[in-house]
Picture 1 (cartoon, helix red, strand yellow):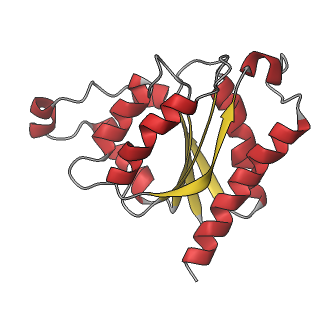
Picture 2: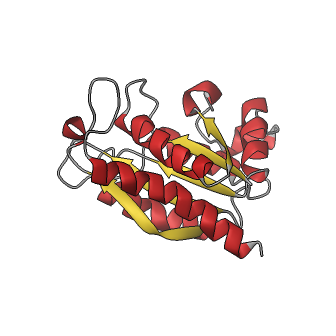
Length: 182
């Protein structure tokens, strides 16, 4: 089973990249082959129909192929101005063009922020987008508020309950895909 993991944050010290590490570990522990895609390495142009009309950029084709080859996705995202970060939304927009690469994929979503709401609003904003792409969303969504207090200076989680919930989300994704494929 192949899973692709994407963090919506481009920042090196991102709490979301730290949290994603645990979800990825949970999925790997459950037997999945997980590839982490760093959106910073793709450097997509802002989606533009005129650019698309000239052919998809090479990095977009590469990204779409990785999504298409996956059975499921892990998306861990921050919240910018109560919404989906622009880089993540742009990647989703590109990968949905010229054949929806996300169709019929299972997806686990989570997020961390320094605010007291975690990433509730960005995840709520993401739900109709992912549903419109015909993705299957896991019922479990994780919101990590006050992220600066959750992670230590090495990026490790100090709270065992949160750590277990993240690991379990990765395992749950693998279990759901396994049951679906039977």
